[in-house]
Image (cartoon, rainbow, N blue to C red; front, top):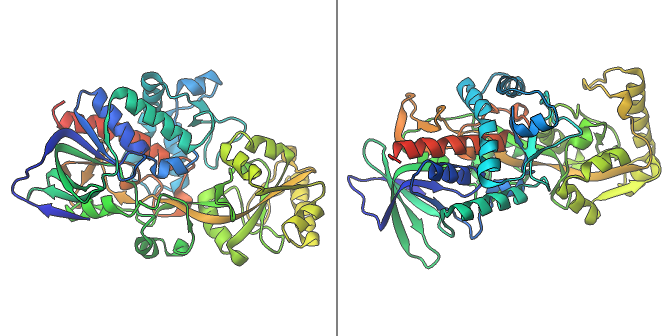
Length: 465
């Protein structure tokens, strides 16, 4: 992967807006640029667009949508921005936080009204760090389903999506203006495509073990739950052109991936009264801090394994998620009439697990805060029968990347914008700051859809559409 500086560029074809990557960010960018009247082409490395979006839960936080109004949720971009900043401790770029918080409802509305994506708000529990119900998802609550709706929208819009077309090189002039790209075709041929504006929507670097070891060493040996093609291409291209990068240690982890099944288990189980224990049957953290930072906490336990403990009420909540239903079907979820029997199913010390449950129940009864800082709700005390899932911690995707402004333009190290380069999603610096605990639930897709929307509209304007 390289950038070549050339005085002129000859291409077999040229478009106004060229988008690299056909995940949520790339398809939002392309749909938005097309809406603005631009001629658009999307280049996708894989045979079928999927990327990190398809591996996610497909949930997008947005404030002030009609879907929230339908269930009487009072929310605002200002409150969403405060929640984002509260989680990242003020370490993210405030201009980008404000931009995505302000434009998220627009992106959701664009997909729903113009392209028929059937969103609804996840009800029944709050995700860590969110003040109100604002997670928008499609009916099955999976990223794969969301990608299906986005792909159908792209088909109806007549977007030109070229698959099996990995970009091998960018061409730019001496001022850093991107002139076009070269793609490697399956038959070994190399095609060149020119553009007036380029949008990088090809995610982060989680699939590059060397970059992960350099920037996120604590998760260097963790299960990687993202797309293997996320190898830092955008980061390398952008920095080769003189772009700034920031928060490269930022990432989204998850402390509840069914092991060895590799299925995401919803964190609603923890937020609504469940808890995690290690191989000794004891708790080891405040499960309400957030699922991203919990990845590292789980991986510090013996064998890098924990067990989610919960009851039938929580089992019922989790069944609204297709991933969880798949975990049930594969036998990852085990049930028992007593906590001692559940302990035996997971080879945990029965007496220790019973003491842990009794301690949790006492905390809920007394309304006291435990040594980790968690308070258990007396209305959510666990009762038999009990359920459990053996889980591990995983790296989902990186949150650092190319620095962009409020128009999704990629910025140089001196703060000036590169002439015609835009970025969003995992290619751009996110809103989680440099640490795992800065990740607010949904930050990944929030950056993907909002910066994708902004980048597409901005690129179309620059290209003269």
